[in-house]
Length: 109
View 1 (spheres, rainbow, N blue to C red):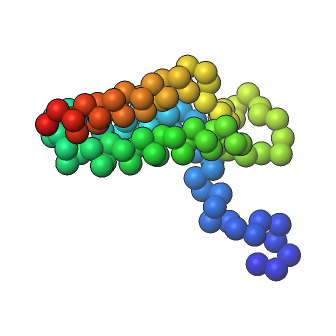
View 2 (cartoon, rainbow, N blue to C red):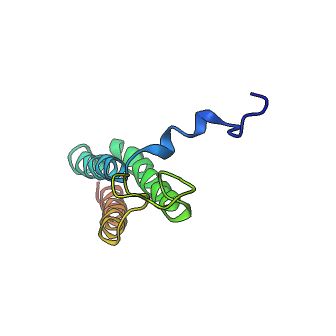
């Protein structure tokens, strides 16, 4: 659109998600991938590694700028922009646990 300040309006959608929704989705997918590897074995290893990549990507986005960008400070009624420390530690631990279980399944079976 000529004269528009927003050159790519389609990119704004995923950046406006509340952090709690992103964390809940990543935690659910990570634990589902972990359980899938334990139950189904090697076929789910690729899916679990893909979910680990998704969690790492979300942690990079969180560190780079957060999930809802604004030119103003966050107000009390607006969602948080970044994960807190406990959420980062939990997601990083989930990635490490997924990698450990995938390595165990690939070596043992």
